[in-house]
Image (cartoon, rainbow over all chains, first blue to last red; front, side):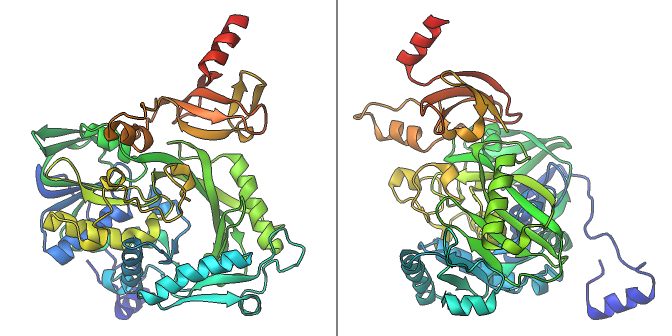
Length: 423
Length: 94
């Protein structure tokens, strides 16, 4: 495998780009692996990578029913931030952001991580107070780049927003995380796949799990469309379809519902918006950034009913378009290029699960709600740690299935046990 | 757009309705064991296929209804009033 470097790029430029190998192998499944990760999304690939890198595991497979980058890895709005408030979440997402900051070097793959600031617009004194509480907590616990901006500062940094006094929700300030930003989602999937492959991980694409075999309280094998694979340890990382796989493993229910979330991209424009801007007040929920190709990438709420269909509905297209022109009126004549939808694990408190299961050698990574993309490096890091050491790290000690029973829900939004409200 | 045939108002766009959740859940008695309440409040089968779910016609008659819908294709198989007594009265009329 050719390592990417200034020299290798230069040399291949002179040789007609003929010197590059394929980015990862396409191996035949072996009969047995020490560890099998089900799900070749960002979380599964990151888990395999950190198992190999941090825990010196050698015999690992990632099984993916489709192709790398074809699921939610390629269906998000690529936003990375760590502005979380509750204990556990705060440390977890801050760790994730730190991993993002070094990810391109670590993977030897340019994930185009751009720390362009994440700006949440504020529309009332109460919202400013609420944001100050959250962002001060972040500053006190290791996320020093959290800031509250007044309207003048915001106007000088982001001039195109609708600052008119007669807006339905006039903008009076913003909560800002400077180190937050965006990354190129495909590059993250490919980078993790390539780096894991280099450490010996077998990435098995077009390999759909169709069943499992159990022996007492252990999972012994998975049945796949490419044959039976036995494993010492199995990790599930298939957010969106967690419940189905859970039932294949012989269980029944989970504190999860599958909902679909749409994302949108406009035709490419000249540079317009240098930051990630979030608009959320009243019934509105909207987040937007500009990709390096110039497209405005944005999204809003869920489609508001449970669904496994990877296609979005039109009322949300209208809602999101209304939000877009209400905060960025200059987008009024911009045409939509594409919109798509991904299936989310919406959990009962809006927080994920990285935990052990009733089966001794089965581990679960699920329930990522809207937040899976930014979480993926830390998700892989902690899930690998859990699988290798067979105990949860203290950071994720409560990110388990028992927290509801024990009344220690991690409900960042305070929305209660209604999965669709945890946006 | 999904079209839902409200038993009270007729066929309307789903955007007139608000999605409730799993309509098959029966809440246990107040003195039932904690495990039963845990299952009812938090645990979901999360069916991929035909499920019974509740919707409220918030922009119409404001009644709650039970809809059998496929969560993969969004095809609706049946709609009835969520309130048993009301559902019985409506069925008698037909």
